[in-house]
Image (cartoon, rainbow, N blue to C red; front, side, top):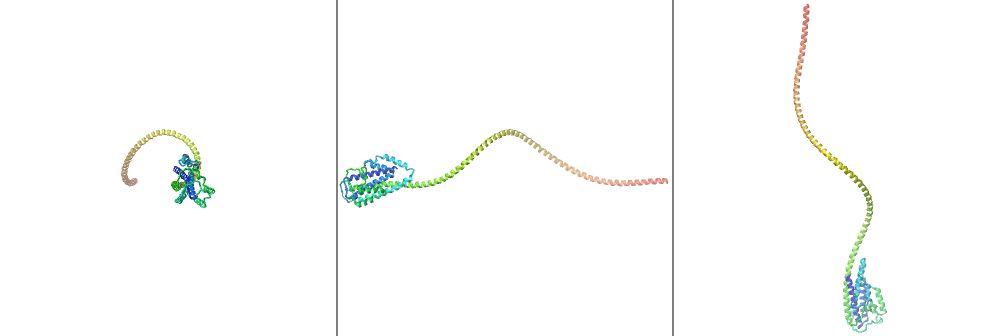
Length: 397
């Protein structure tokens, strides 16, 4: 913004210098061709309009108009309100921070118009320079020729020189030219102050051409700056498009999140209710836990007694186990001894069975012998009885 302000101040200074030089020469010289003189005057007016448009571009149109009416001269009066210009430019920049796209598009469009107008003015200045190269310059009064002297060619040249985009302003100027005289802005003392120094038309046109070249260079710098701003504007547009897409995506996300938020609110309310119920349960469980701790303490005390008794029982069991092992060992020994005894008894039993068999055999033999002896005895008894019976019979006989 500071560079644009400096460029604008340079434009104002160049315009005033050009108008001052023209007013100085206008008092003592007269171009032989009134049409060419009118072209030069209208060229100066076009330069002033370019500066005014550039002031509008920067939001300083009111400053440019104030410079027109304030009566300041070329010796430094154009910079009298410099502080106020900076302040208004800062206000304009602050107002347009929220709409950078509109500002940049307007800047680009207006700078393109300014560039075209400046190029046309430089071309017209070169044509005027070529026409006046061999023309004699005579010192006369600075009054402008009446409209009766101007021909239809003058009007045609004017129409060529003012082919600007500001159609309304130019139409008003043409009406004034047809009625007579130049626009009032060309006779304003602030734009064309009268100083009595003499200057030739060729020198004046060289000076004008030099000033216009300086103005063109400064305008080129402004145009390059505006192109940079235009590139920045394109970047901002792309960023804005991305941000709009991002905003749309975020809006969709926000909508989804809102629905999810409502859902989560309901879930949160349900969770709060469950939390209250759980808190009541926690209180009940804490009471139960206290009771369990109390019972656990009692159980721990009883467990210690039980452990003592268990240790004693384990010791008893270990002792009984040792005794059982000893008893088992002794029982095993006794069993082995009994087995040996049983074996011995079995052997003796076999012997006894054998002896029994022998005895039974002998007993059977003895029984047979007894039977034999009994039969013999019976036989002996019977025989003796017969004998006894026979002896009495014998005796009887």
